[in-house]
Length: 208
Image (cartoon, rainbow, N blue to C red; front, side):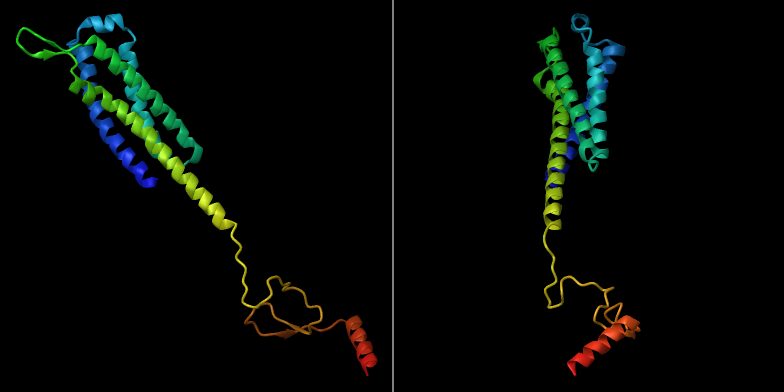
């Protein structure tokens, strides 16, 4: 599970870098150079803000997923963020695809958003968000399996059956004239109380 999680996150990071670079250039061309037909954004005034929000959420979700991998339930937060970002990125990609249909100009060049451009510019960001979510889920499953295994190992009995008593009171000296605090410590004699000496003497007299 952990290997699958690392693989998904590595591929997600690679796709995120590529898609973010291309989409940042596309946004700069839209906002500054105005190379894209204005009809697309006039009909969809929410497109550019949603586009920027999707990119920001993708980056934030991926970074939080890396930072919160070992934080237990906190990992669910970046997974939700990355999932929402991938859905927003998909909406942006489909809207741009409908508004920028591929066309051939008078010079014979293809204009618009071709299938290949749609894949590496926009759908790669959708795949990055999906892989981030998948890698986080794999990591959660791996953590859950490890927790269950530790709990099962913790409940296994570990008795010492080498012949020694399983339970013993090291502080008790009932019936013993000598005692030892440790296994290899030299024994010392504890004086018996007067009542015990008297009881022991009576018992010895009865035995005689």
